[in-house]
Length: 408
Image 1: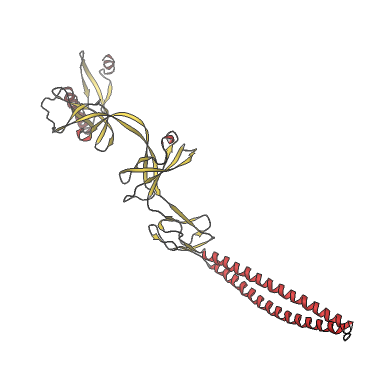
Image 2 (image 1 turned 180 degrees about the vertical axis):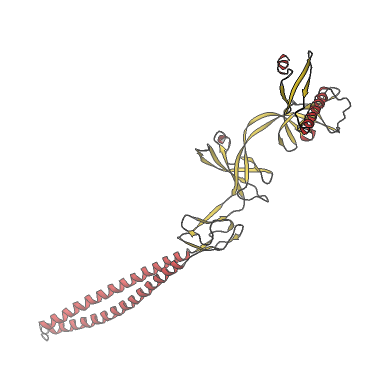
């Protein structure tokens, strides 16, 4: 009390409930004190607020100080001391359970986008059309090369036919002259001439056959080139490889598509999961298959979430691990929504009280506590809410009987 007397002296300006007051005079006894204040420089609104604050302070203090013998509650509840699991809320994002990014295989300009977010597509549906003029030009050139190779083969076949005929004739002539020569009916010069013509015809036949083989090889290469160019031309039509739902379209007509640049994102399976970053100090308390609670803030819902995967690598910047948890199917849930994954972080004892027993007077929170033969109005401070229960941080110790209703 002496320390308070030293601070509250006449002529000193203080602040009460946020209002500046000037001490004019004071009167102390052993337990109470009386002082007068100067409100001359305070506006009318602040004066009214000041008197209201004083009234509430006096009302609540007097009500709390004296038991209420005539209070009759409509019902009673118990303030219980409970052991609850303390949780850490890891910030997360709702993402599709399975997502596929569709990219272009060639570098080309986007000609048309045939889908939009939310569309359902089947395997083989056309998603994006690319500019195919360059691919069409290459395909025309490849087909022209194939036609040229086919024409060369026709010429090679004709050359082989002619070479075979010349070879057969030269062979017959050589065998006939050789027979004549053995019977002295032909000269050695005639034999040598026939032999030379046979050897030349044989070499010509071999060259024509090699030309035909080269023509066949040219046709095979030309056909392979046509097929390759045709595949490249087909790349101008970006087809859905799976059945799913379009999540995002990342390009517009006129954009430049290239390998490695996503064009469309598809959700290929029904269902979602939450990807949350759990600080490294708690990662040992999380394991695959564990069922945790997840909060979807936008929907105001709390649901079960099964841990599906834990990325075994800590982010060196945030000092956290990426945890993926499966979410149940629910209406109104979309990719990208904000949520929280509740990680258990030990137990603690708290006083829990039904919210209906708390009396709200302005910013004050009060309860009617039963004494032996009476009731007492008591000031409390509440904390977290869980369903219809609220945590009492101060004012109650547990096992108290609290009245509900019965007050005007």
